[in-house]
Image (cartoon, rainbow, N blue to C red; front, side, top):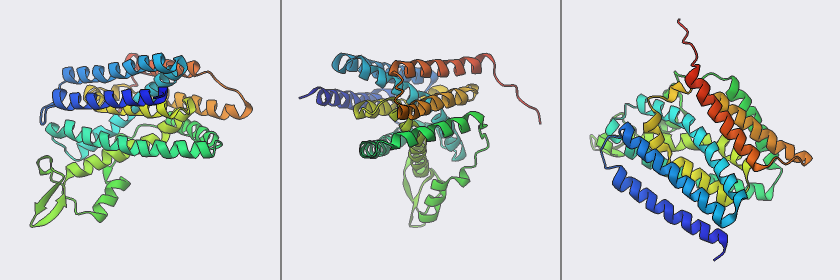
Length: 309
């Protein structure tokens, strides 16, 4: 077995054991997730990701390890925006808290499968048409600028969500949660519950976010092993991060601007390669850490003043 095969085998084994441990020991069916348990679960996933970082350093060298860490931190910071939308989805569909953990896990596992397909297609396209990286870079710069000047839409109307409209149009959907089931019988007719709708929306929402985040990862590395592993570790930590931050996610008011600056930087880094300017990966790592940390510190120490209507 070569180095890459060994790394994939180790990653797959760790992932399988971790998911079983997380589902079996940390998340009993129907149990509520306290802040303490969420902190333990978040620490578990972060430490596991860092342990894999150490393994990569040992197995493939510092370059791959730093690329992995940069990509992981990028995806992890972008996850907080995911959580903001997840909260809106749960609130809109009035999901009972006892179903949160199970619904999030199913939605996230579905999102991982979709991301793997999305990443695989991206890698195949980039390998065939390298110039796509420059287009990705331009998209990231545009997205970053738009994100920097945009205001968070606290009143997002889920009724206008295109996926939700599609489901209502083509499937018999009920507002009932079916006690956690995906389908129920109503007057002898099979109906899809709100839990089913929420799972689909969680998975598709993550894929929408991946349209920005995956090109950003390509700006850090084109190593498919690093792209797969960093994405999957970041997404798997979403569930525990949701429970940890759901009461405080709006306190990070300037995180959006911090992420925007990172996206602009990564986009410019990709475009700069046209004129053979190559920015070392450790510079990307430093930029990501400084921007996200600064945005969080400013959010906590200097929160925006609420305007009275």
